[in-house]
Length: 136
Length: 120
Image 1 (cartoon, rainbow over the protein chains, first blue to last red):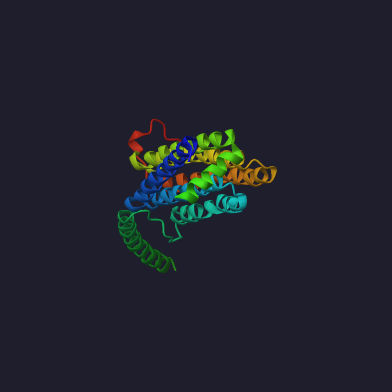
Image 2 (tube, chains in turn green, yellow; image 1 turned 120 degrees about the vertical axis):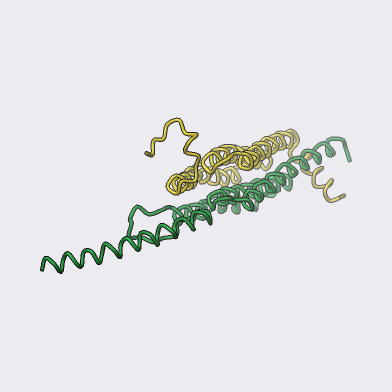
């Protein structure tokens, strides 16, 4: 076991330690939130770090048979993020009642606004009915 | 342990100087990735965290894919790695744009810290 092998082993161990710290911090961001967007940022980061770990394994083993996995993960990692971002974006159409809350506090506020708006709509509708009836 | 040292010895014998170049590129990629992780933990709102996440991550992935090409050093692996990099370069702006749009529309940013808000 030559000195070069030991230096190489220490270098590889350092790379893996840095990537492990990255994974821990990204998972910490997923756990802490506070919004679903932060969680998607963290999960995107976990996926990219997995790509880096696979790349490091390919380098050390000199075995390129795992490269297609890199290509597929790189091509599909965007879908989850885009789907969640679409789902939580408030619609510009007021008729839509979609899920647009990114935190529990938002959900409570949105529910309050929805009930207030619903009562206002009801009052408006009965008003309309009266005026329409009066005009007839 | 012996398998590990045998594997590293074989890597050094096969690749020679390319092994050290690949190790350096992997280290740069890992450091950039750790920088992005520290950014998303320390920065205060989703828009700033997006900025901290996307750029170092893409450059770190570019370094690690370059390390793969340098270590394996065949044409076939180069033609497999180029699509991975192109996909990342094309799709990371898409996903970060969608996250930023959702964050702006649902108000998950520090409005008082913006000098100019072009979305108003």
